[in-house]
Image 1 (cartoon, rainbow, N blue to C red):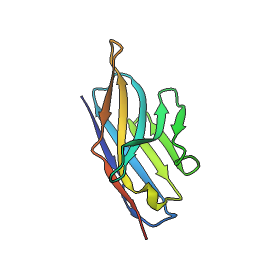
Image 2: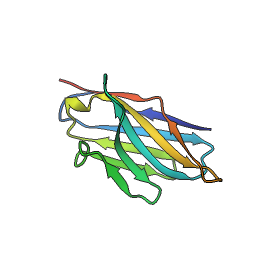
Image 3: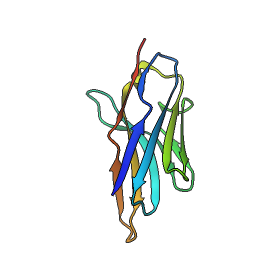
Image 4: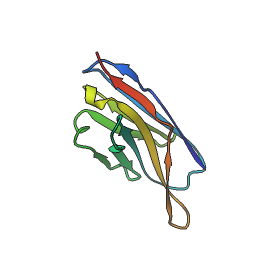
Length: 120
């Protein structure tokens, strides 16, 4: 079982910055990818950024140029540096880990979420 604990959310003014962290613990076999998702009130959860085991990254169009995803492999910690934040970035941000089990099956794990509110 894998546990993901997010931190770093909060209230920030438009144009400000925040860094989210996600600490992974437990039995992890082989990480295929880790990512950040968000869900705003009344909307579906959407992918924000993903980092794959080889280090390649993928961003939603809304995040490109403003957000940076990174990972500290030694600490099993995922980060999302967010800058130039906009009110529309307001959402609960969730950490996701895709683990490849020894027999080839993948399994998704989710954190509990951290609230990010962008408002003046």
